[in-house]
Length: 145
Image (cartoon, rainbow, N blue to C red; front, side, top):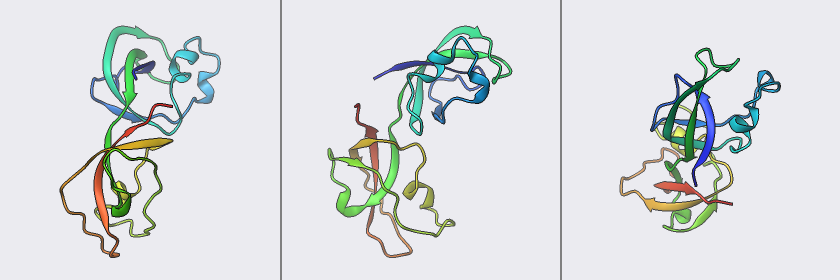
């Protein structure tokens, strides 16, 4: 489901993704605060699907903000093989691992996941885990609540 929000003009490009972190103190007196913040969930990754041309003033973004349509982003993560079933709904939990230099670490510990997600596809590429965990790479989409 698409949502309307405002984002810094320099960042407002179709296809860009961001993780919404919540309002800043500087946002409190702004007349656009509700448009910027009320439609988004903290910790969720969004993808910009369209950008409108009008520019609005903003105390946070030097070159102002633009109105954008966003939707929760589909993205790729790594989970335990036993949970990797296409179509299943899950609440994500990171793989227990402290090997931050591992090439898979960021996919095993992704940012921008909040709430429940549906496994949209299981990717065929093999995931090698140096700790010996049986892992799969999957694409997920947020479940609308």
